[in-house]
Length: 495
Image (tube, rainbow, N blue to C red; front, side):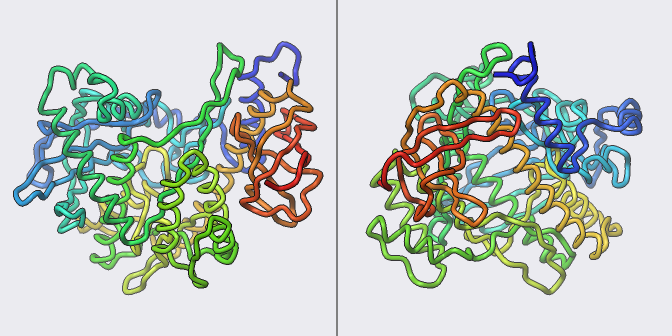
């Protein structure tokens, strides 16, 4: 349903996205100065040097979404004696081309992130950079920052190192097909896997190492959360459905390795006593409500925030009711609160990441699409080379605040366009009733998410006494595609 005659669904969503971007202070297009810089950019030529390792011969592979073109990282494993495993994560050296204070850098600084909407993706860097020159593309030689980790048989990180090297992507793989292969439900998904048994074995080693890392984090209290991320499905330019994305073993390989790499990076910079950005999730302010939610499932949590106890509760609930676990996860995520960027100064300790159960954590593995990662990469490279720090402490404090604010703004833009897409899909279903769960309850309004399709909207009538985690029956009463409004009223009592 378009709001302008003859405008396609996708065009409507792109128009809404551009307006939302501009309203939030984002730049929707690159400046002429940035495009002029881009014209003069060329692939970084590799040259053998004593300070740079040649690791192109290793069995590097990327695993990402089917449609991903901005490849930030590659991974490879090596089995060691005593059931140890060496894991190498290669992160694209974006700083090699995107210099601080350049016009392209100014755009990245302003937006701080790539923004993925149902109507259009707004990349942080021009596509010729993020999908080509600085992307770790298949069968291309690229400079990278290597994060090397030795993993014990029990999943602990025994030692680590960080250094620059040249790499080459030998297989561009996708999450769903790799997961199906690992689970024994499908044949090898890529010709590189079919003809290269060593690559198959390497991925299996990575899978086992990732599971050990994950188990170790859970023992420390890392939270296992599973939400339903819905992506629009188009037939041509018209929306047909919202399809929920689910986690799988291939996604977990990348997730676990990136968490470990970010932890190692934070500890490396701490050890070098340089100021750096940290990614933190503070102790939840609404722990009392989390305790109440657990009690509704006959589980007693302590009165004070305890990530280990919460992790045990979530693990038990996933095993007891896997079908409804994403709904519980969404409730807990809302109550935990959002993450933020802070600065850790030398000889000081920043707050940890409550949800990941790590005390030292940064963002460093996605510099093509996240500005904090590019900041961290510049600090890393300066530390490794012994050159002057690219940012003063005052600059970092301001950047941490700015990146947190823009991440929140980006999330709002993405949610708004998702709501517009959902309103478009539901516009013909006024009066229909749905099972729902309350996902937000505050003075500014009460929010619910229906189960099929997984869409969130506002509860306009009958919200008295409804709190986060309550289940209820709702009726759709109104949609507005342009504003992204989806309004419900309570149809029956709380379930």
